[in-house]
Amino acid sequence: MSFEIQGLLHKKFDTESKTSTFQTRDLVITTEETYPQYIKFQLTQERCGILDSYAEGEKVKVFFDLRGREWQGKYLTNLNAWKLEKVAAVANAPVQEKTMGDFDTFESISEDMPDFGDLPF
Image (cartoon, rainbow, N blue to C red; front, side, top):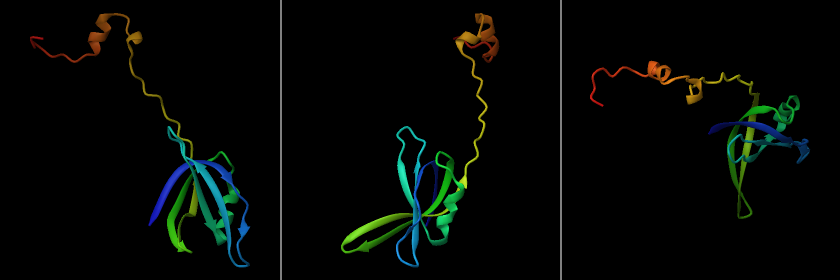
């Protein structure tokens, strides 16, 4: 099962060697919501180097899998990242909406309103 999320790269950690043949590297992103969430992901093995070309504060998209296991009666969940992409800043053109301050007179307001013909109201 594969998921993706985007946010700002908040923190990247150094690679840790768990055994002589297994290494991991963690990263944390901050979501861009009303209440930002700090979400930690883990890269493993050859994917640890993926993070080298990213800087903290960059907007990224993280592709990840959910991993879960049982260990000594405890249940552990891991967000296993397998791909990162830089998110290009999209220039959003401001939407031009008219406000009451944009109209000089009542006539200019009525020019923009639809004609309802001979309706009695």
